[in-house]
Image 1: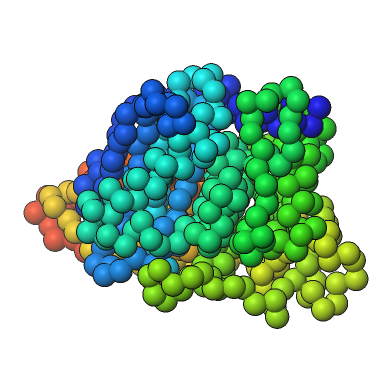
Image 2: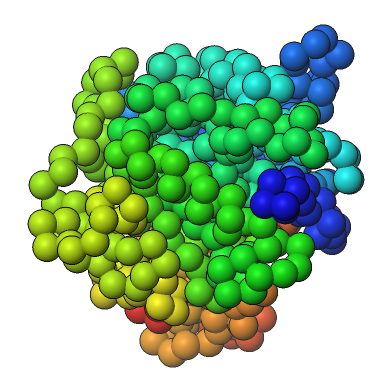
Length: 439
């Protein structure tokens, strides 16, 4: 029954309808680049068309890696991947580490077989590696096909990201598996779902399993009840071999992504700090065991490995004290703390009555909204009331697979009450999702 449930969770996102306009492609003009491949009819190749959009930090001479944000299964989630590379929060992580941000968007028809792309061996591995070559040529970074990968995946995207880690462990700096993991044991009811094995090299790759508590932890029935048993089986198998794997149960959600990015992004930041080599084509660095913290599975308290009294081969692995403290906050109520203000907006311009600006997101907490000031007085916030049906309100909004809403929200404001002929002074203040304001 466990693997019947696993199959259902892999395919279930197809049942979550997303509303139009998800056929609207954001423009792919520098620093964004896009390639699209048609479906193939050749055995073993990808049976669905696919778009890959990449963002590259401007002025960067050499890439050190690529962060891949992989959506889940189903037509709505696939279409939501079109905006993944435009996410300001994920861009902040990429920029810090001289990485590109890549978001695939598979054109899987509604209720079609998700395994035909979320199992990398069905053609999506080859298509992904081809896109790195083609996008590297488009963006002027021929080193792109050779740099390490940091992988994030939701649902079937977690199945894909985990599968890519087991297939290419020497390329993966770290992997975050939101509600989806590779299958390690055969499923007699669905022979079409192929299993994976755990190579020795994968044990050195930091992994984090991130199911929602309503996916079989506290809620034992329903469409997503099989997620936790699948995560538990994957965690247990990898950890028993000494793998660097953790579990962070989202205390508030089912299959939606919730507030996971406020732990996922800092966790990937810590892993990239430890793993990325300085030189292209140099091997990934190993993570030191000196600062590791451990926690019991489904526990909420972590301790330094030296003082952990439980079975270390069954314990959640955390790379350092800072991440252990963030993990303890997350598994309690998902309210990961942040004491640093966001970066101040830049390039503020006024043309007529329209104000425009640029902004980088706060690495820890993203952007909630902007405050518009005229002549020292607050006149508006943008958006007026940030909303997010899946977690903390956020400036760009969030879709089910953790990507910005489409069409994208613009950093512009029209001052309809400005006095004609009078010179005004405008300022824009960024506010992160814990309420801290920029200068």
